[in-house]
Image (cartoon, rainbow, N blue to C red; front, side, top):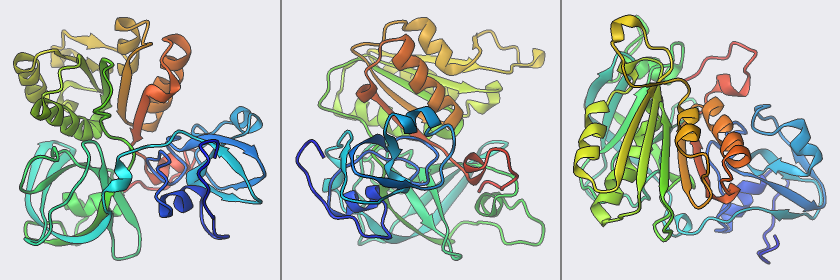
Length: 347
């Protein structure tokens, strides 16, 4: 790496995995080639690029020497160029059991799960990070933490139902004859994970961008900023298809009333007449562009569907002068995002 950091990559190991094993903080999100957060450049040597979503790494970017380090293996000695993330590497990643303490329906297709850790465990994490459930079949499912790190008590996760998904069907009790999640169930997860978290040492105004349950880590960031007394201007743009998708709309309005320098802009893309929606409409990232044609000097924290994240990253940097290193993202990916033309179920 141009920074001078050196590390060894095993033959069956991804470049990202090796970097994290050596406590080198490369940025990452999904770890499966769908979100593009780990994208960097190969300056010398060769790599073997693994399967990935086409939108996360285009053919043009490949010709420019870019790569997704979460699903790339080293084919020789290599020199790479990547942002480095400081802060997350100091927090231990653990595998812990947890107990479901409550299941609250926030919308027709969104449930808030609260998880209690063992009395001997106190989980450290940064506002915006996520955990991965460890399922019995060896698969993993990732969900962001909606609880700010200063709060004692259960961890809150927001889970959207993906019909046909094994895990979310279980959470929602959607499959007849199959077990449904209930209070006091025991689960296991690994965390905290991810390089999506609030950079507290910066002074730039903040734009928060969320679609759907991408609101969960944004909630943790806002509440943590309020608790720690951060006074940087902060604007939240939360997008949904229908008003009901903004399942904590009242909380956001409360923040706008109570928090100095905080502004809330809800955006609906497919409002129906019966919604009586009089607010902003269209794609949520385009509302940001309309309000902030010049994003130079800002930081953007974006979380939600991959299509929104990719559009925002491209348009903000190309049209609005946002520096690439000032765009922080966590993309909520599923198996369907990896195979957009297929019929793989999300979970």
